[in-house]
Length: 235
Image (cartoon, rainbow, N blue to C red):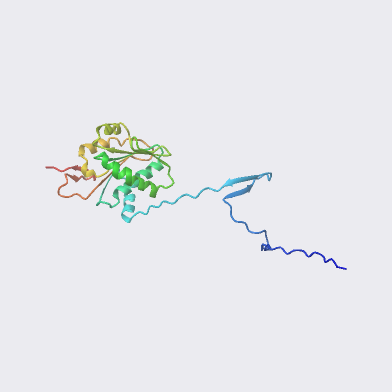
């Protein structure tokens, strides 16, 4: 007679999870945080705020000194330096900084020829400044009129003083800052005319004129005045 053996319990192949004797197993952090309502009746889910991108811009020592100069009492500033010295970049950086800080403000970047400002500033420098200095700022590129609009309503306009129609349009607007790029190419009359557009009134922020130029040589047709702005060289 055969004898029936009792079934033995199968051993589980799953490994036991080791826990701390003083509390429940540790859980991986979640992107959302669950909070208990003060009444104790329900749970409130709060979504974690996304991390803010840090600016990628690393200013040179000279650019840092330029920023300090911009924040002093002078209302007209001239930067002189060689090609690719970073003077144009840091001026546009300051204009964008003021645009972010002052909603609804307008800022102008002007050069003698519109094609030059379009190719060098609109297609290159301005985009680099936005990407490296203001990665979290939402902007709209209005190519039909060539201006940049920030989400707070501020605008950065581009102009060429060789375009009569565009210049007349610009002269009908008021700006918080004006930047005359490559000033040695701009006439003194154009400078005095554009300067009258520094008329946008924002409490606590006086209008400011920025100018940059390459080091003057013997062939240049202008010299610096005591205020730092280019004047016609006497004949």
